[in-house]
Image 1 (tube, rainbow, N blue to C red):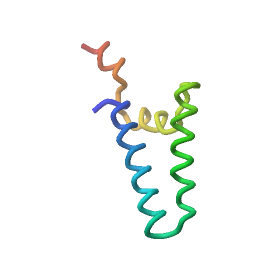
Image 2: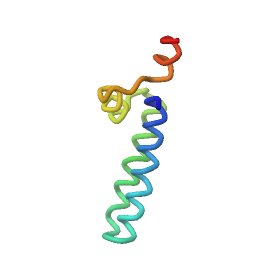
Image 3: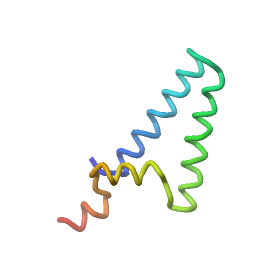
Length: 70
């Protein structure tokens, strides 16, 4: 699994989890959804994503790294 796919899965999980927490626990958990969405939006323009930095440190290779290794 590449780092990009891990990032997509993580972002999707965080959005679904925050929506479940908003419904089941407290309405203020909606701010977690806002944070994840804002982070995805800014990373599209800046190329900086804190979650991707952590995923890379965890040892996942990017699609470019996987392609070069072939």
